[in-house]
Length: 295
Image (cartoon, rainbow, N blue to C red; front, side, top):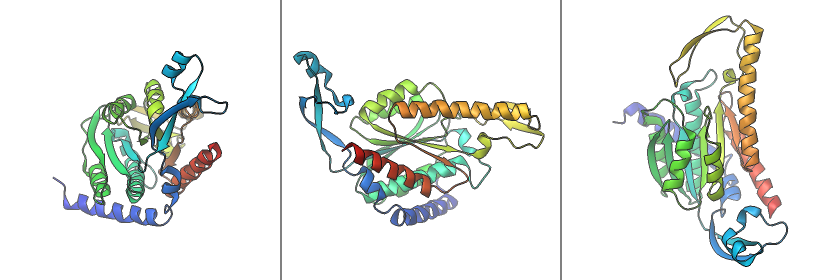
């Protein structure tokens, strides 16, 4: 049952994000994403400069020289929100916890998409798929998504990005713009992300907290892994411990960045110390410059 408190939170998040969409994001989403959905039209012979990802290998194999698939723009998009609701999202030492940040990003994207007459769907996941809301249009769609984000109580604790991406590929056959929103504290999803990239426009949104990168020098700190429940005691006064902690974070971030770049993805990183507005605007504008430069 949805409580009065949850409904009040839904209204507050909706009002706040609606103001952002009507203000800072007015026109930004549409200029970047509108018309990016594609339907197959025909094939033509490859010419230098064409995107090699559009090569039709079946036709190429039959005729002996390369052909590419040509597409026409759809009038609307299907936007999917894949949201990590695992236990690590409850961590936060600044303005909010990571889950709150993810929820606001989802609300902004959903409202922007619906204002653009696009379909919006939702996948909530932990170490399993917890909820699937099929993509639809309509004024009440954003409220439904915000309500699910704020009221849903997941059964799992861990994070399985591969499971979420696999589910997307099974249930949504047509091209989508899919926002993958997580702290990305997981491994083993590289191959599935590469596969999804072939048929969908995947946009990772990395939510984080500054204390995940830097330990304060305050002596003994009890730590608990929110996903596994494991507890450890860390001596943060030891510079070697702080250096190792930082190195581990930086190595994971660098590996993730290499993966995103190798796949040609657009992505954003947002910390609990900042508002969602500027990172999302930077993402939209960088994407617009990249897409415009390719035309």
